[in-house]
Image 1 (cartoon, rainbow, N blue to C red):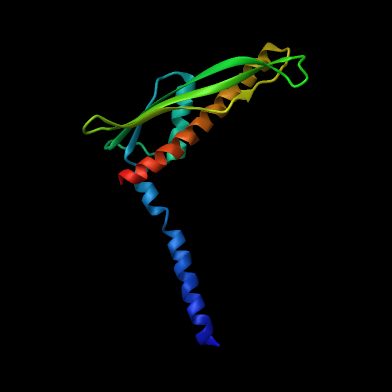
Image 2 (image 1 turned 120 degrees about the vertical axis):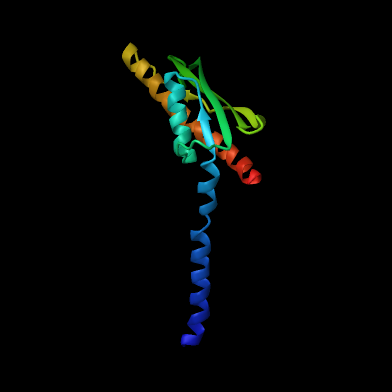
Length: 158
């Protein structure tokens, strides 16, 4: 009985160890990146979201520089029943990944997020707060999309 269970137990231990050590390379890749964004409210929020998604600690010897900025654009759309107008807000995030030693641009581009609709309230305060919350959500979404795109590039570089 013990000789039948022993190979299964060894295979189980190997699978658990293989899955557990797969995240070790990701930590060392992202510690080589420093971030640079403009100094307005939503770009600073965007920078903090990028730090969270890339899990970046402030290191002085960064191998790569990620320059990024985010801007928002709004347009009016009709509601489903056609009686009210809603604001549809998009986020455009521009980024460029630069190697710091040679100032060579490794990858650059822009990402446009899906639109987010704001409420059709008559209160000016609620409209402003709705737009503010939408911009915060869109900056987080853009940071996630940049992370997914640069994750593939960083794995090829290392």
